[in-house]
Length: 525
View 1: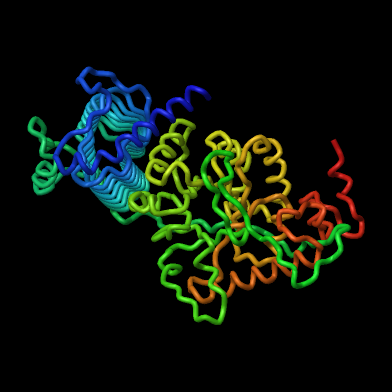
View 2: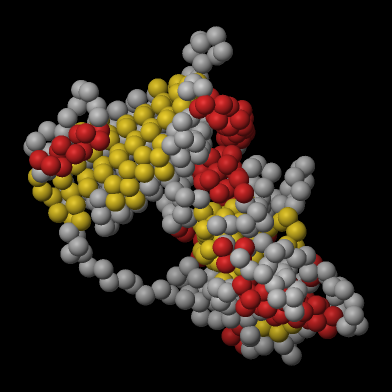
């Protein structure tokens, strides 16, 4: 752990020093060097990860040594050269960079790239060009399995042999192979390269000592693949079968002000936590809906102060939702956000080093002092909490709609046990993401179960309706807290919850109303 933390710290330090110099160097057409002393003596890097994210147009960087994952990701027109090897996700989310790796690269090189050019001169790992939407990737040497998996557009050229399942799930683009190529999967056709394609692609490659030979083969999508989609398994319940009861505290008068604020990012460091007026982070696709909203003056404007989780156009208080859907466009927006949520269900599986690389890269753009979260399905709750604690995330968001069908009441005990086992010694807060638009009753019950806040979809993608929904939740939260005799939502506990039927008591471990204790099987060993 200490070694990993040291590598992460060194990587952050390099990015923080490099960032202010990029614009000035671009204006002077100068090359910034990593891996050499000021006197020009080589000091090769060894494992630093997430370096040089979001390189702006005109920036030029040259590095020496062996670099880790997520190197030169989210580029916007710069030039990056590594004299050595690099691990996974080289140039991921690229939107304009020209990247050259003079030795080998790991898995997922060019993942999700939108434009630009990546050249790898000594082979690469699996999933080359996965999910790419444009640009050009050239590899001299062999490539692993699933070359071009899920690609939508762009060109991949491999001057060597490739592994099995090439072009799996592709829906566009071309894969050119000058070497041995296994039979492609359903929906992908293997054919000779045409003369016009050779002329065009060789011109784009612009390599003095290399031309794609006439006997190369081409893989392309034929449109004949079966496009039937499997139906999603949804949650089988809601919170209506759980009741909220007072303890010994008398009810409060209706004019008493109740504290409904949730603080995120209390790391015990110098950073300032973010205060959510409501223990709620609504999820919306486009933040422009929020920024365009203007109150009519008849209702309190809560949209302006309530952070949302947003995929596109986040405001300064919003958290950017990171997934493969927006990986190649969100980079330039991160510095303007209040935080970020990394959706692990919508990204490839990553090991600890690759996650560290992603975090260094994205948090260098976001700002290290801003909070971040991981999101994953409730069926992977232990993995989510262990990952969040290890990487010091501020929130671990459990998504109910993960295909398992686990109900909301059943999720309470799963989350509670994992909290106790994995998060007790960390500042990571446990959060839930619902498959429906929550009301105040739902939020109170989840907070009583030990969750910090609730994420959910908005009832509509309309500013006025969203604002009315937030105002209604604020009023109902205060009314509910007053009824059960509490002045702060942080004072809620499981003692305030009751299962209203036998089935809910059986799966949640809550006290059955009337019986006033958990069902006997919860005490069995």
